Amino acid sequence: MSLTTLNAFKALHAHFRNLEQVHMKDMFARDPERATRYFLKVGNLSLDYSKNRIDDETLKLLRDLAQECALERKIEAMFSGEKINATEGRAVLHTALRKQTQEPVMVEGQDVMPKVREVLTRMADFSDAVRCGRWLGYTNQIITDVVNIGIGGSDLGALMVCKALKHYAHPRLNMYFVSNVDGIQIQSVLDKIHPETTLFIVASKTFSTQETLTNALSARAWFLAHAHDTRHIAKHFVALSTNKQAVQDFGIDTANMFEFWSWVGGRYSLWSAIGLSIMIYLGKENFQALLQGAFEMDIHFRSTPFEHNMPVILALLGIWYVNFFDAGSHLIAPYDQYLRYFPRFIQQLDMESNGKRTTLGGEVVDYDTGPIIWGDIGINSQHAFFQLLHQGTHLTPIDFIASLSKEGNLPGHHEILLSNVFAQAEAFMKGKGYHEVLNQMLEKGMSLERARALAPHRVFSGNRPSNMLLLDAITPKSIGSLVALYEHKIFVQGAIWDINSFDQWGVELGKELAKDILVQLREGSAQNPHDSSTQHLINLYKIYNKGVLHADQE
Ligand code: F6P
Image 1 (tube, rainbow, N blue to C red):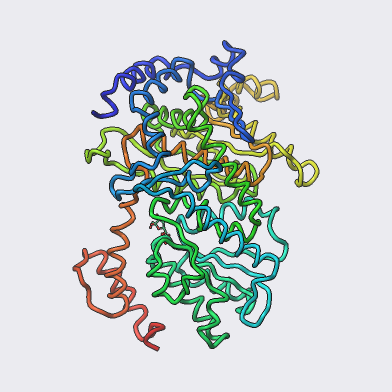
Image 2: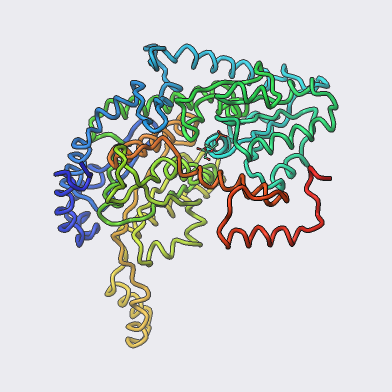
């Protein structure tokens, strides 16, 4: 049965018609309790969701929709290891990676928890050894630089967490992330480091990703050009993967491999061996706190009634805007420099999960699903693209994210930051009407004629929704909870849209075609005939580079 035919969906539609014209500022004026009623605190995270175009009836109907979509049962199915990733026949158990209690988690009749703990212990031992200088390079020097080579889920999560928690980092260690197959990126890192004091972490779930393997091969060649002996590789290269054979084939000893499993989705993998760079950089205690924060959000999500359930509420609000207000995008705006990679991380998490148009039953949906996720540091964005959000024609719901603690910031800076984020949320909600604008100009002595001409340009319609997410402080625990919050929000939306949030078939076609085009660019003949535009582009490249030999032809 399609989502749009459900009773709650139809009721929401009728309700939307009533609420569409209501302005949030009037709802605030009528209801002095609104800010405290639409507020939640879970662990170190506070959520003010009062600046949304909702009332109690909206929330009730959205919860009815969740019930009608059997959300409770679906949540249990995920936590208990059912193979909810149906198109890949896999369980989805990133929650097992951060589980802090002793009960087993069964996959195909086997408790996965002993293996999870075993790998965590190996990671802790290894990261301790690197951090305290026990792990030495081939010339007995301590490691000073760590390079994570990976892409997508094998890059973004670890990168985001390392940047967010940089203030916890080991003072001796420099952490680099290489993801782009454009050689400029790895070269710029190699230029800064030394083979005798560098550890390369090759992170790839499949260990078949072209970009990662190409970068890893270049790193290996650079290393061997100095070390001259492949036996030294063992001291400087480790692998994070689910694919032992491919790791071995690549030339990394499996003793230097940290394993994870097919039931960990790439974009949900920072809690697994993929988090090794985090553990090395921040230490095992901080990695443990990250897991603890996520675990606490898991407990909250699994056991709290929908009415007070933070991920469920965020998800339902998103559904409200996508399916009833036709909001095609959603902005993530952190007001904290530490969180500058957070929008990019959520972009993969959300769009690779819910950018789908086929239901679990194989039908094409007749409703919208995952919105385009975009974002950047909020304060900078105010001076760049917020204009469109305030006065443009699109409705874009916003998640503002900030930290309450001003500790560590320069005197006076944090108040400026927070005054801006609070002001933006207020401005988006309230707007500024024609008469207020006109009177302000007249009070300043402008002529009536000029004021009337200018007023329409200075009007803010307001009624633009936002959530305000406040972390007590940017700590490993609060970052763990924040990431788990979004993971579960995305899960809930996928469950309601009846799509598989855990596969990513949409990335395959491009990979397939690129393989064939690569053969052509390197002078070989095409396996498949291309369209005339693609063929033209290939020819253009070849003509331009005529006479320039490719590296492996030199
Ligand atoms: O191409 C998409 C993708 O498969 C992501 O889902 C994944 O996070 C990324 O590539 C990297 O894959 P791997 O970890 O197997 O190298």
